[in-house]
Image 1 (cartoon, rainbow, N blue to C red):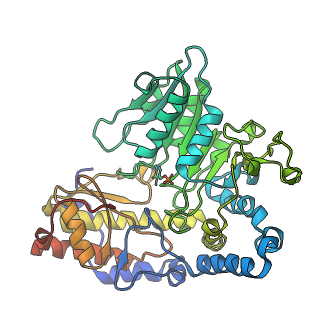
Image 2 (image 1 turned 120 degrees about the vertical axis):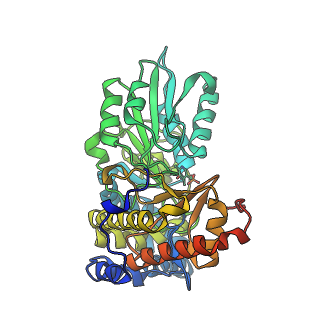
Image 3 (image 1 turned 60 degrees about the horizontal axis):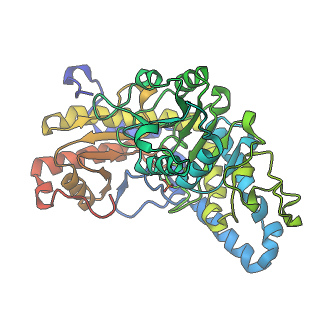
Length: 433
Ligand SMILES: *Cc1c(COP(=O)(O)O)cnc(C)c1O
């Protein structure tokens, strides 16, 4: 998006307006539930969400259960470990518009992608190709290429990556045009991780099914910030992580969705935790896999890396995903408008789509000096996210970012640009960016 003309914008340039927005915010009360790093404004909740007090107590509860019950914690813990993945799946279902049995908490995005691809990708005759996009997160592409290799198929020939005309966004019609009779499976992100573009999942899914193509989505950047209707849209499968918007903590266990119509399918990667629960401990060498999404689990669930979700998902259930989306859109709109008004002459470009329907939860600013501007922001207590070579991602989080925070972030950016403070830093990324 080209920065808007000043005259088109009406947002008042005053901290009092930000405070007024906060005083009318129904989600305002959740902010005090989170540990916000001291003296900082956290704008990186789309990479690693913050710890809530409820997530902390839930983890401590699991530790306590281990202390008290030893192995009996599998059944006697407050949140019995044996059923935790299924229970958390049920709590996740409303966030993605899924039935309870279609959802399970397990694995990471990448391992779940391997599970989904090995289950759903069945190259047959000339229908062998996997369709993805050229802007997606690298791990997703690594998984696709590895799965093609396992089938003895060359990624060069069998992986099609839809290109972008502007280097930031992907046109849905370009995706649909690539859905030829040779395509067996489509894998796309719901929200593109760099630009924050939200794809039209419903429309793309319908087009895929008209061509008899299996379609799955990576919800890394939409779960917990954008509502979904995966069941009604007929999406075949989906995967996500929980350490971004769902605030489960570093390495928190992810999840997957398999549509009801596919439940009962044999998992591509089998393991004993995919078993029907009542027969798992019969220890038979013939797996009787569950008839729910639970079938796609492999080994013992990582209890300490998922129990935080018991607390965290409770917050989502109270706040409601629609209310979260509404505030998130207001926050990102406010951030974009203030940026346009106050920063337009410093060479920033807003790279995410402007329309609410096409925007995820973060704002993507581009600037040739982005790396050093991010360092200067950190030096001033604002925690952004840098994506090489020129992207500053700013994610105001509905549960713990206020409108006043957004105002202050833009003020800080303006000061850094005015004083040229960023010139004190090198324009290279750090090891983690
Ligand atoms: C964050 C992210 C990942 C990370 O995958 P993990 O297996 O959870 O490490 C993968 N894909 C996308 C689109 C992401 O945004």
